[in-house]
Length: 298
Image (cartoon, rainbow, N blue to C red):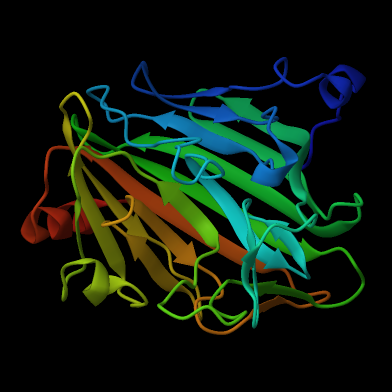
C-alpha cells in the first residue's frame, strides 16, 4: 500500500488532537486507539488500544492500573531494545534487580497511511531517550465481525532496523530475572473481577501455560460490574512464547524474547501478526475450536 502524503497539520498536532480514532464493527464502537498519549516518560509512551470492548459493551482492557501504571491496554512494548526501555517502569539489571534508570524511550506515531471505521494503518518510530531511532514500524490494525457476539482484532506490525546494524530485543528474563518473566512484545492488560481462567488446548492455569508455544491461548474473565468475556489469542511467530499472569494481574503477552534475546536483523524486517477474538461469554475449548475453524484469515 502506498503511503498517503502526510499533512503538516497531522505531523505537528499536539497530544489530544490527533488521537483516539475508533474501531467500529457493524455500527458498534469496539475500541479506541490512543495515538499520542500524554504520559509520564517513565511509562514509555506509545500508542495503545483502550478501552477495547466486546460487542455487548463489556470492557476487556485496563490502562494505567495502580499495580503497574505503565500497562497500557493492548500495545506493543519491549523492555530492552538495544538498552532502551520501551515497556515502562523499572528496568531489570543483571546482578542488581529492578532499578529506576533514565533509559525510557518512546514509540512515536509519524504518519497515517489509511484510516477507516474498521482499519487503521500507520508508521511509527521506536526511539531511545535521546530521540535516536532504533526501529521503524509499519502497523495495521483491523476489526472484523465474528458472529453476533464476537469480533476479531488483527494487528500486523513490520519492524525494520533503523541503526544500520542488528537491533536486539530483550526482557527481564534474558537480563537475568528468574521465574519466567520473559515479557515484551504484543501485550494485553486485561480487566477482571477475580482471577481469570487461562488455557490452551492442552493445558490450563498460569503456571502450565506461561512459556508455552501453543497455537492459541484463551483468557476468560468477568469484568468488574459484570459481563463475562473470553479473549482468544493467536499469532506466535518463530521463537515467540506466551507470557501469562493471572494471580498478580490479568495479562497476556506474545513474548518476543521469552528466554533468549530476539534480533531485528539489519536489512531483514521482522513481521508479526497478532489476532485476538474478543467474545462475549465464557467459551469452552470446543467453542474456541469452532470459532477458530470458522475464522477467515485474509
